[in-house]
Length: 320
Image (cartoon, rainbow, N blue to C red; front, side, top):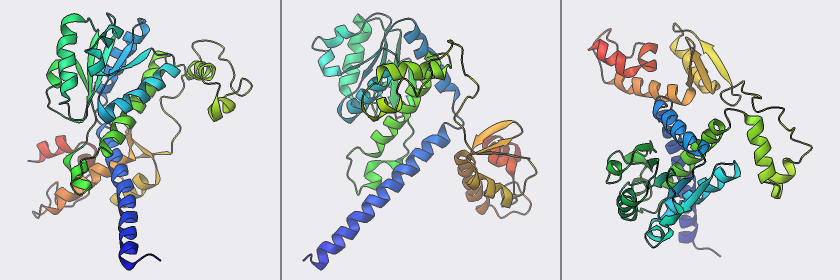
């Protein structure tokens, strides 16, 4: 029979499991909110890498530790979709495997900290002997040793409140950081494949079906179940998957606004489509600021202000 102490420990462990799932979800939500208003840099990265792939060159992914595990997932996804990609460990590269890289290939370096010394040493040498068309860093850091050695950066935001040491009683074992990097790269690779196929999702699906005949996916994507695309310019009708969305006016009440951003995935305001995650985050920020102001009839004293929610920085600057 378990002792009272072991039952208590078991309950604590179960709570840790539940809390960890919640923290992962919150961290992913934070990334979603970040890219709700920082999409220009992603578009530039996608176009740059799509050009490399269309020119018949490879995307070579590098990383160490857990990041190297993530690298293998990204490479597997891209190759199944027709984009030539390879995984390369920087230590092995310095012992001859650097020959994998050909002139015009793109180097994608994955490091949450941006301080992985194996990548620093590799990149400094690679820049002297290789001719990559593009070097890109995937990282959660805003400043690091690798930032100054690459052309572009795909940012994976992970603020201090979502760091492993903060949430895991000081334990730095990578959990949230790897989840975020894997998720961001999965989404990025999916978008890249869409650009590579010129937005033709039927053609992409047809290619993937030919490359994946095995397993449960292969059964679902049998020849009879997926029509062969009629041309390379087929369906490009929608820019995103079908989701619940609502249209709201700028004179909406605060209560109705809250109802909509909880009930719907997206809200369209004056023709601009916002994710509900982004609106929820901005509403929370507005509430926090409004509680700190007691002057009557100011923009931030709790009076409902949709303009601030939509563009907080611009509204704060004009109201001071």
